[in-house]
Image 1 (cartoon, rainbow, N blue to C red):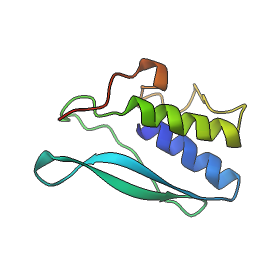
Image 2: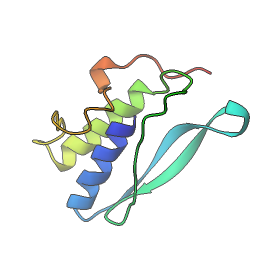
Image 3: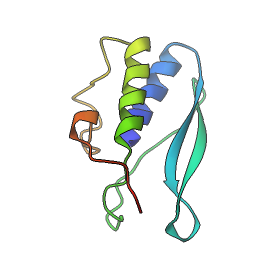
Length: 100
């Protein structure tokens, strides 16, 4: 998910526009909840690998939606295969959303 969010944020920044996306997160006590994130030209985002993570935490439908939104803004650059290679997962590689 992080790669799709970062790609979309960059596309929005390049287009000098913004959007709010809703993403699943781990809340207090490890419960799955959602966060609303404003993405745009002033967004300061980062992602990092967590060695002791709970396993894959992803939402294939969300990733596909974010990649489609990105393609609408920047149709020729959605893949960026040479960037963020440490993150790894694209829509076609994803499983069902994390069920907790």
